Amino acid sequence: MPSPDSQETPVLVVGAGPAGLAAAIELARHDVPSLLVERRPELSSHPRATVLSLRSMELVRAWGLEADMRARSADVDWHMLEAETLADAAAGSPLTVGYPNPEQSRMLSPTAPACIAQDDVEPLLLEHLRASPHARVELGTQLTGLFADPDGVRADLRDAGTGAVRTVHARYVVAADGARSAVRSALGIRMIGPDRLMEGMTTLFHAPLWDVAGEHRHPIYSITHPEVPSVLIPTGPSDRWLFGGFDDAARDEARTIELIRLAAGVPDLPVRLGRSRWFSAGAQLAERWSLAGVFLAGDAAHRVTPRGGTGLNLALHDGYDLGWKLAWVMRGWAPPALLDSYETERRPVVEYTAARSADPGGSIRPVETEVSVDIGARIAHAWEGGRSTLDLLEPGLTLFTAREESGSLSATAGLAGHAARRPAARSRHGPCDRGGRGLGPPCQIGRHAGRTVAGRLQPGPRAVCRGMIARLLIGPLAFYAGGYRIWLLRAARTAHAEATVYDRTTMPLSSGVVPASRKRAVGASL
Image (cartoon, rainbow, N blue to C red):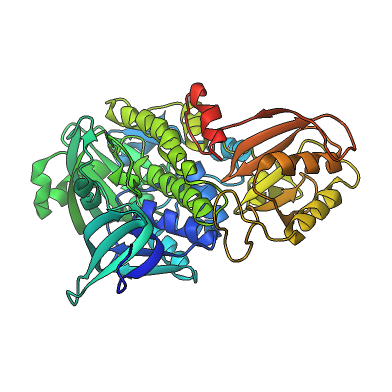
């Protein structure tokens, strides 16, 4: 039992990186309170990553941040350009690195990848989170102790400024505290896989390199100059760039400027140096991602090298997936067994990506393969009436019908309204939220060429779906949660109240490469 003087929060999120911020945003989006703590008094100002993938941009679009992200991104050709120097870009060779071009993106999604720095992404996510009444954020707060009890997890927190210590009791903890995760170490969870696969120095600097590149605008430039094999990476539309090299002499300021000028191919290039950061990267996964109500996410759960530019995106996807599943459990929409699907579904994606990052040639990959891994099994994108199918998705369930029938939308809305008016009954999944006690998750009901009608479904898909199909008088129905299909139902064409559901298939709840043998078990966990 929590001590009488401890504070209570449904979910404690440790770490304000992309994984922790995404998890807290999804919890807030589902009206589930959380406390996010970060030991640093302010976010990092070093752009450790510079690409948001197609799926990552879909997530920030759902959070209402797409325009803000796009305003801070550079318009680029999604190939890596290999050239002797940046000044030789016209003679360079474009290499496919797995990100779709605008035309390919339009076929797959309502958005497109963005060339934006991580230290621009994180403040936008943090500002968005702080605007929610369901989230508390405390920077400069360090986790000093973690103890499991039958009712959840007790955490000791220390204010970095005052040294004051207090205790917080949470039902669940999201450990998103980075590659050297103190939470993971405290739990005794080992990292498995090769370490120190890639080491080097990245230096932030300002120089007018877009003028040097001209029309040859790319997210990364692989420089093959014999004196300075390196990379030049834009952090957005400004003159702020990253120089990545493997020469220890780059620690010296004068030598660093000399190497940047050599890589640029401009001997008198004006360069203003910023911070340099030594890095050592591996391809490792934690042996397990959860223990006693604590879930690892982002770099705390896995490490990848910079090849492919996947680290930031993996962390965002972890946080999103874990966040909405925790929210469903906390609101009584699903049993705690749903949380088992987090590692089951995310781990194969990370295993693939870590192996790619360990491959010396892993930067070069076909778009078809990598986009498939990135977006996974989420609902297919289609434009109808100026909106994408992805734009119809809201917290809770979303129901899509196979074809339009006169009156089907209104009949479905009527059924949803009827369900919401039914007398309160205790959910078999446990206590429900105060806004819908005894009811299941809210359901967005829509069709491709019509408006979206909000409703609510009783927990227990069998009874609800029988009634709904009887009233809809149509064929296949697909239910989506978190953007991924969880139920596909087909019914006999009948107007009887007890319409027969003669087929039901389940799909993975999340993105990625999930073995076929696991799909039914994962979907059935609801």
